[in-house]
Length: 316
Image (cartoon, rainbow, N blue to C red; front, top):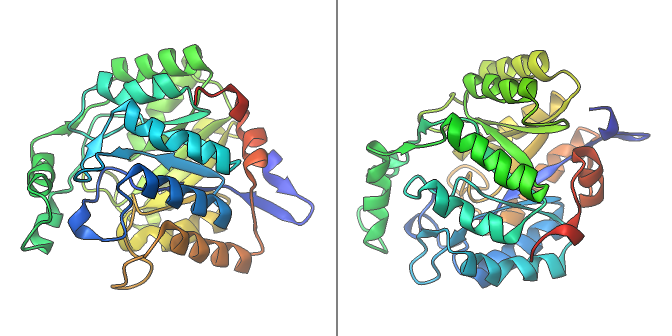
């Protein structure tokens, strides 16, 4: 998009997905679990260069994903008070939650941004079961194994409800999460129908079992289809899971995109080396961007690019 240009170069939006609902406590001792940990990680991520903070909540007792607005409210005000970053709350939650649960916290918080998944899909986290012999909590293997049978449900009706109650009702804009090519066409349908309005923030996601694979030709294809469908009406962002995180974000940045990193998407900061914080991944990404002569967008630049309602208009 033209408003991402500056005299010295293009400004790149860094989104940090701080904790998510995919990884479990056994997988890394550095995964933020408690509200205090999530707040501290989010604030540090913003200070390191992340202008958008994508947030989930976890039960502080055992780290399982929770939709409880009270838990969200333990860290959202702290993040707002300490940073100027754009807060982006999940509407995906976890595939064990129904839509009412997934919407509970966003509707109370009325954030500037929320994520919105553009289709129902298989979302397989069960391969992680083979990587650990023992688990810190009993819920972890059961939760991962449930992804064999559960569908991450995002029907047309679900999507339209989110667009109506959050988009129309709260002025919230969306990180449109597209895990496959068909998701781009679904978003194009809503653009044609006037249910979403540009500028769109399109997050193309690679490497989730059940979604499009983390192959460079898929990255090029998704970019080409998005350009065909949305033209100059969107800002493109790239994320990939696991070891593909930094390479795919780097390719996306070279191709004119924005980037997403964070412990939700990968627990690593190099081959076989666990990231000790979200900041490690952001610093890696900032080094790449600097080497490409690209600047990091500030939160206020993001608000201008995506035409957000502003931090003053949120409910926390």
